[in-house]
Length: 371
Ligand code: CA
Image (cartoon, rainbow, N blue to C red; front, side, top):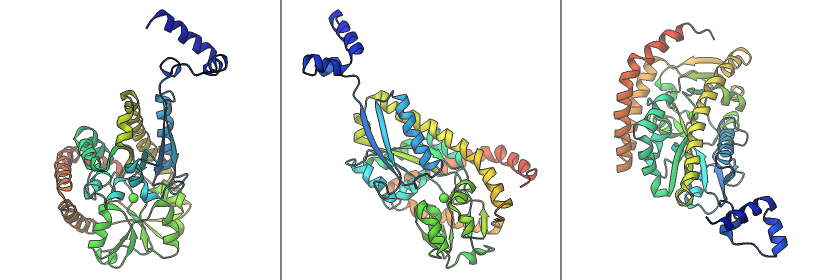
């Protein structure tokens, strides 16, 4: 850069563009006065407004992107229904004409791609630690990118709920027969398990669950865990709170970007999006673990919620059915088959290690815990 240009740039910094326009009456050449090009994205989520960690996590993600790019990339976030209905976020970001990004959980898009389901929650699959391991260190992210590429989308995990609860019921679940005729809100592969054991799975976004349960449109529901379920007031609409969440052992939450919009960004801004997502993923799981215990105690001690455990035989039977469902869903197309096989292989690998490390340790610690 010549001496003249440096001087001119210093001058512009001191006086500002407005002054230059005022004094010269014209805008100077953009390569001289314009700073780095600013990018403004819109993003629509599947979460209700004010949903803790889910929606606030997306807001936090957008804030971090702005900070990391010094304002060069800003993302205006809309909750479900504010701009686009919850379950249209994927399609909208895929088209990229109204929004450039979205957030949700990949099992919401099973109708678009059967393979998508493996990247959020697999019944009797990996927990949060395992999902992160598969995605970041086991080839999972590459498979996820492949799965979303036909939709012109790029996925990134931005959070994990940890192990969820098994759901809210108005009757006890003592055997598999108790699932028969049960209309339950439960998404993803878990919903298909409920269908196979004689129930009716219903897919409802978070914002519609309480009303549906209270009015008897559904008999039972799962949502997340103590923190979210209590906020939603589910303890006012059902008696029994079951554990464990066999259907969602470590649910990954996603942000997705329109691929064309992402690829138009300078590499540095792409890196900021990726980095903010990784940071958010770590932050969210930490928050879930930090807050769920207090919420659980409040549910038990103040709201007198009855915690019930699915029996070992019920869980064993659910697991057999879940493994069948995983096979059946995988047989829907080549990509689902590929993802399913990779997932199984990875689950087997980390399972061997956790069976001799995490598992015996947690069994011992759990015996010492007082609710
Ligand atoms: Ca759930």
